[in-house]
Image (cartoon, one colour):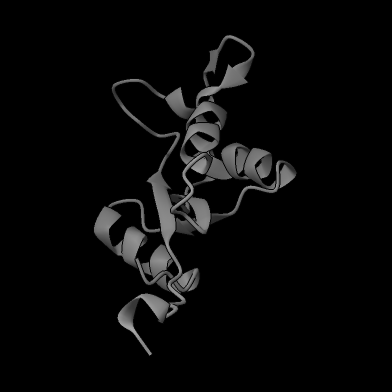
Amino acid sequence: MYSNELEFNVNTVAIIQARSGSKRLPNKIMMKLGHKRLFQIIYDRVSLSKKLDKVIFATTNLACDNEFCSLLAKQKIEYFRGDENDVLKRYQQAAKHFKADI
């Protein structure tokens, strides 16, 4: 078998960090630009990549992100909720949860 005949099953996941509790511009992820919310625009654009198997949002466990998660669920967009203060841990846990290789 030649190397170009090998098939790799790699799960490539884009993890987009988003939260409602920003101090500089609170709830910016929910703001509308035209007819769409910012998170929808970001999701739609990232989803165009042919190199990704999945696009998810990583947000916090705080109550202020409940509405955001409800909208994601209604649109069948997957998400992960984690620690508010440890963004790296949130990314790592999200990657593990969705079995991301990359």
